[in-house]
Length: 116
Image 1 (cartoon, one colour):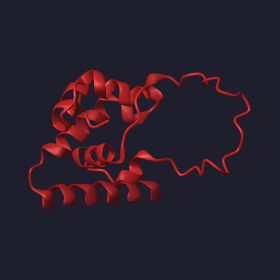
Image 2 (cartoon, one colour):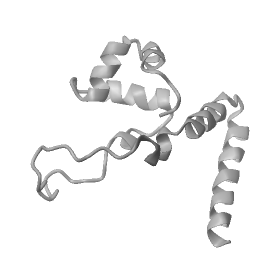
Image 3 (cartoon, one colour):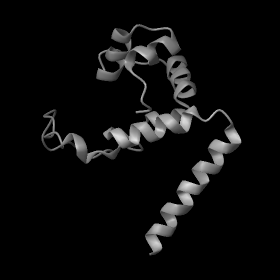
Image 4 (cartoon, helix red, strand yellow):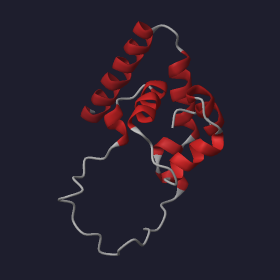
């Protein structure tokens, strides 16, 4: 997601990359304290890890537990090299105020592009 390998993420939270893999695959559950730690390392709110579906009121899954066909790798912009490089460069900016100005600029350019 942020250009971090499982190994580097594991180092930042005191785990082996195999343990990170188990979390990613869903083989191990993530406790609240670990989730909080991950949110700090990745600089995202804890809510980032949750979808907004209410599990009690969620519609039934018509195909049961069958997995949907996988979309092409390039169809997800978060998996593109360009995106990962951009995110990596963004987080290499040490000054928070400069990072924030770049973020605001990108948002402003995106809004402007929609109006053209």
